[in-house]
Image (cartoon, rainbow, N blue to C red; front, top):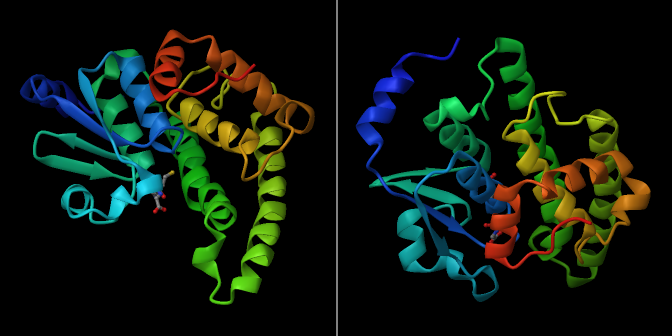
Length: 228
Ligand SMILES: N[C@@H](CCC(=O)N[C@@H](CS)C(=O)NCC(=O)O)C(=O)O
């Protein structure tokens, strides 16, 4: 089912080192995990978001959108977490992190699109509320309203995941590490949800993921605490 061109492509690019531009605990974590999962040769380049390094001239030459992640494959740079996840998985088809069955593929794309276009966007309104209000007094309101929206969305993710075990049911895919990023944001200071109590399916999913060696390595490398 998978396009045959990928085999030839892999042979051509096998020597290219990949560089992931990331920030610890950011949405780039999913790409970091997937690079570990597929056993790719890659380097990490840290972008210090707290120092606003995403807006530095040097980084804007890599990604003019001033965001992480960015993945450089030689001179070729790819941005947007879902696109990077798919690219890394497609470079390593034997690992099977991107499904090629049309319905499984569509379901995987559905998860990635929902997470990036709706759930991430809702979270940003909490995390960076000041960007969404000109009146300083309105900032708290933006954050509180968005936090309520996030609680509903987190509940919808929990329900959709159900007992899994993975986002696509029996099949592990790039959607799973991407979901883990949002689980960690749920337990983080901006949302401070009680993930185990309020989102038990998602927490069971996160705990299953934390047993995977690739995830242990990525969390250790970024200085993050594994879900417990
Ligand atoms: N649509 C982009 C969003 C990327 C994004 O917003 N990344 C955040 C970290 S999770 C970032 O770089 N934030 C820095 C900022 O907002 O200035 C994607 O999915 O990759």
